[in-house]
Length: 137
Image 1 (tube, rainbow, N blue to C red):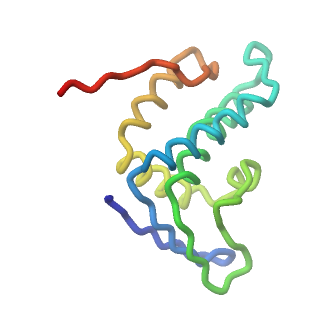
Image 2: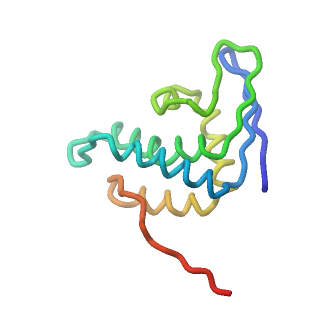
């Protein structure tokens, strides 16, 4: 399994994130987090741009980051762990989330292609595909 380490420190946080390539369990964890977001009501036809962008972050970035990250916090004002709520995720420093997201999708490129195709669907969130894949021997 491939891993990469990110260290982030500012006035509020001093955290080391170890991001890994996804296992089956990580993929299922991500799917459950996505399903929880889909369970919340959302009318894309009435949503403003900011609400749509928030929805994309909470459907794709938050679940992916949480599913494949181990957290090690040092003494700081705020801590990060796997119970990080979607709302708290939106309040994290942008520089941290951008680096974290880049590493997650670098190690899990199969998630990136899925995310990109969903974001291109006229700004509306679409449900995860039930598409089955086969493996040839």
